[in-house]
Image (cartoon, helix red, strand yellow):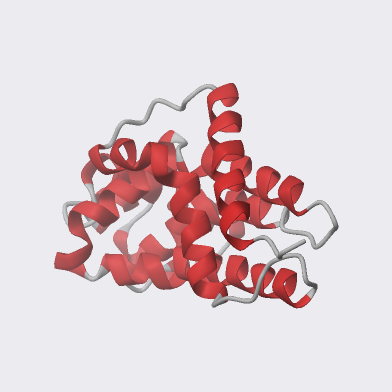
Length: 201
């Protein structure tokens, strides 16, 4: 009986990430993933019973740890602008990276046909944006932001942060902008957000 190992699991996920990025979700085959991982389809299916489950693990492999670094910047403090600035810079550096841009491209291109869009949203942005909304709700309760719907405020914040780069993300431009440009665009976004949501002095 073959023994499952974490190293083998990681090798499969890394191979799958490469195949999904190169071929997209629908065109990627479990046979090719197994071959690149140096094993058989039987071994692959013993780790991941379906291509959807494997894609979900690839999303976590490529995005979860990076995005957690961004959300970790959302710490309640009197320097709300500073926290939003740190969050925004980290967020954009990650979502504009070539790997996450490729992942987003797969979802945009195939989400409606394959159901991978719902899988991506429920296990990625949907969870992440709720964390942002929860943070903003805490800032409203603390009196640093005016009372409003936290989810709507979170969507406004994310929209402002990504505004300058939406077209790049849609058409698949993967060149990461200079850090100085990202820092400046985040500062502008935070300024506009606080102009609309900061509590009255």
